[in-house]
Length: 561
Image (cartoon, rainbow, N blue to C red; front, side, top):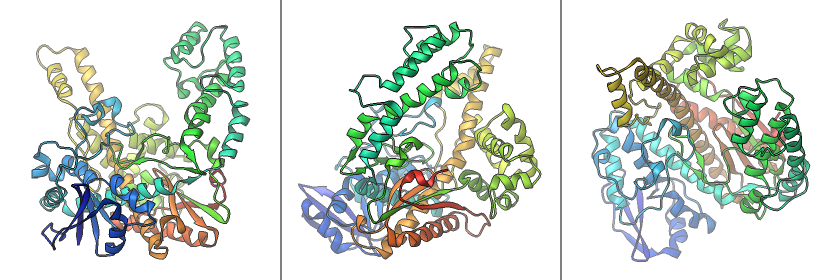
């Protein structure tokens, strides 16, 4: 049974529906403060809650010590189904925009530019308008899935997205254990004593003095990339940017202190004292995730930088007394996903029971693990230059099915066509100006320069679609992994989320569980079992493995090399 919740006249209406969206009883009305009690009374294995936005409904239930087993998040479903190539002919896809779509006035809710393709939080999440009828929306989404060319895959994707929304809400509620005193000490060790906002800490000022001296520029502002770039060029260094990867290729006495300055300045800006004051309260960092916030389906963070906690501050993530952290990450997730998507048994075999890159070396495709890694990343991200690009043809000969899949995706992108993940998440296509420029370049008025420009843009879009199919499917695997683990934990510890082992952190292919010490090894076993579940759910009996590195530690930093 589905129970559809909607706020009406200061209260809440719960409408029971069958799985197909048909009425299954009379609606129930109750006061909004009674929501947690109503959920507690109704939730069970046969119930799936339907609401416009998990982030609107679930926090009140969690705050009251409750939880739900399953839900349908209509906002997330709408986003998937609106764009899904498999459901292009549905009434939902053709319907005019409403409050469940990102507001048209939000610039980041429009079709992305090339520069935005891998941005976090590409799609803005707005507060849903109660004028949207969730019963009608649920029926429209159900019909769109049933009438699609891939109903099983789309249904699984929408279900996984909704489960991810529950996980995200529970992690926000529980928070990641955080020792503010340890964080303060780490900052002092790295930067010097705490200073007021806007004042450069002592260590940064010392390094700035060295940078100014070695560039012979006493007035240099090292926090200004434009100033630093001009100073480097005056010193005879022909650089095009101040990016780390470019500076590392240069031999000059200023490079080492300049890179150190950039590293510490990033720490101060992203996770310094201001961040600590704003984001850590009562011994917890509460990460605010945006489920599917990146166009590929990866999660993003709504402030706080949850998707990129630097190693330098992970020592502040400390389990409570009597508790431990179970930290797990999937080894070479994207290439393993690629092997399974493509049905490439040779690549799957290369990673069976060992490091996949070592297996690539054993296959004879390349000579070293570093070459294997560079070539694989080059294949998935479209490298054409450097050693990675040079070695891609050797991978193509060794693993033709896998490399053929990403090559076909790249060619589709170069033509301006959409591509899809395993479960049907569909990539955006270029805007009208992109197609107009391409067509104009090959008319009688076109020039070689125009043709080179459009070909360059086409290759850029091809690199995006090449990776979209892999990164997006890896995100689907991660959703399945977390969803399975959440179910396993809840089955044994059905009370309030924070009373037993619970997920507290996630980033792409890594999760952290906070658990009472006596259950830590059991949790580690469940984490591994959930990874097996995820592989089977997405890829059936295809012989691909997803090995994990799992550590039971007291501090997050202890799980890292």
